[in-house]
Image 1: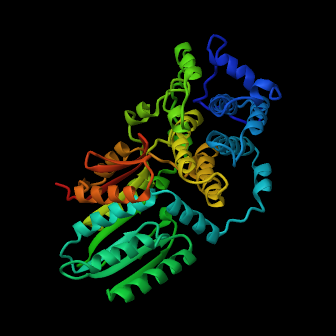
Image 2 (image 1 turned 90 degrees about the horizontal axis):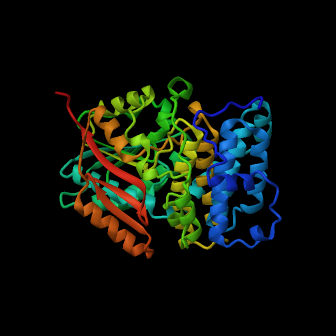
Image 3 (image 1 turned 45 degrees about the horizontal axis):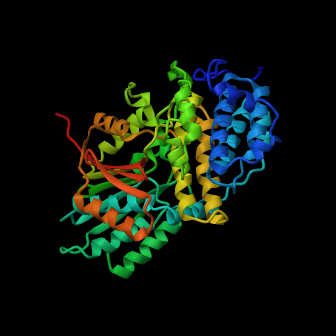
Length: 472
């Protein structure tokens, strides 16, 4: 097709594969068939998974006509207010369509020229995510405990927050510091954010709390994107004990020109007949369980090739980490998504993202009513936008380059940081928070001195702790 480039990681379903039946379905207009209308939720979910994979293959191969047929079929079954799989399919379909339209920059820009992004609405959506799911609360509890332990006895503490959009974390820390046996230190927080209004709101909340607690406090706002941050603006002073908090931020620094680093990767395996037979006999209670049964072309995200492949180089990331290392932090706590969405091909990223976001959507399905506007906004404006960035964008535009804990361990170790095992007390605090949350699906486990936050058995976020290490 003219205007579209075939993706190197595209895979095709051969006529000898059991998926051939599904591929024929996905390219035929038989959506009015009674058996499709009468599908149970699990059957429809499975069918949508196969339609998505078939459509993604057509997009990756540059076949616009077949991709269009697939997108139309999925749109009849998907819904942003339906069951879990219908919701996921709606956002993955939107992302695939976005990727197709990007082949015509003029058309894409025209369709998006009047879109308005509200800073206030973005803050509200992240606040809803904070309220509806415990992930950020857990990361903040673990981070604060690591900082408290590292700063024991320190009189002047300087915390650098790489995304100072959520004052709740530091309000809790101020309260904990007030209760220290030796009394609170002089605390300075440098908050980084690209929007001045966000920093002003954070500064107001924290200053009020510090005054209430009678803690000497300063807030240093730095209006900047992380990628263009000037380290000198952090104004670290001699005698300060430095802590760095990075919550879901570092992965954006991996964005680079993919064409320079693009490598050939083998296509995903086709599903064999035994696996397909298991699919039809399964009776899964949640989409997360459905996705964990090696349904998608025999692909298992727990054993992806990314972990064993060489660590991709990123000059921006290396430079940024070296700058942080130069501040000699006593503690740096890093929270990241525990998934590999930084594959070089569309199909790699789509399959990994399906597994990851299946669990995130499952969390909300299990704890929040389907009609909740808060839930719908989190799914659309947070999860949906992340999915769109992972699937539709390439090069420097693709910021959501999530990588797994083993990659971050390699990267931070190479940058001169030494790992600090998170304490058992921090783990206990996190588990106590989960118990008060009143939902059985959430788990937290220790892994090589780091903590991993899970939904059921699926790891979703990792928290690791580091400190300045002198080179020998």
